[in-house]
Image (cartoon, rainbow, N blue to C red; front, side, top):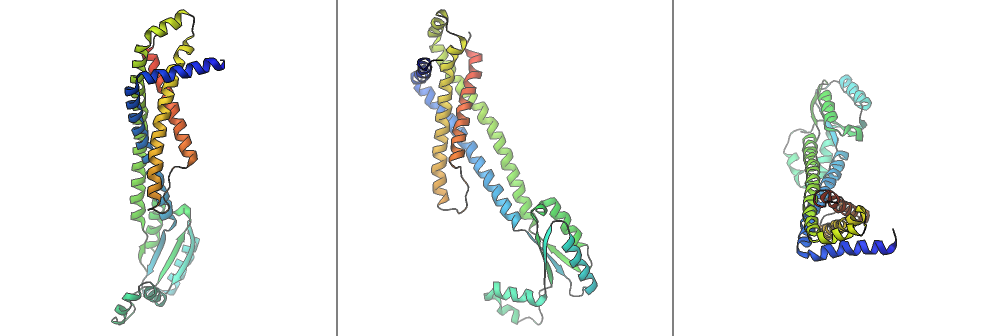
Length: 289
């Protein structure tokens, strides 16, 4: 295809949209809003997953021991914890060390300890886990197994918090997928309506082009170009709002992830392809060649 033909097809695509400025603008606004919702939920889902990974990385398991635990039982427990799948390291904290840690971390409350006749803190093992053990089901299985050892009075892990974050993350991923489908359907519907109006307005021109021997692809191309332009404009609109909001939020929230240049460009390309694809689907229904 010669450059003059390409310029003509692009010009016709833009002209078709220009003739329907109101419907075209509304289509861009509606599609841009839908794409913005998709992008926002994607950002929220990714940030939730990042938070979840950080929380999982900070999971420690504390195994509290009874004062009356036998030395042999404590030694067996220590060895088993060291060899347990998913455990990176095991540290024993005596009762005296535990009360010293409390005094260092809570100096304002240290006076409360003076009123006690004996040390209220039990000895414990502190476990640092490998990433492979951060799965809630595996962590639950591990804590249940440890709790069955003689002399163990409690096993503490922030398991419930991780499970809550997992559920929230799963919900947002599901919602993002549903919104993605809704965006696809709405884009096809909005572009289809705009293309239908342009096709009806261009019916006479299409008949003339057919009489002079224009191919079906040549006739369809301006409409597809118009849809692609709409998709690109909607994607750019969504990304401008998202990037502006991201810059404001990143000034107040440390470590917040937002779309970078690559993601912005990829999103605009995706919306352009969505616009072109929606036009092609719409043409099959409204343009009879």
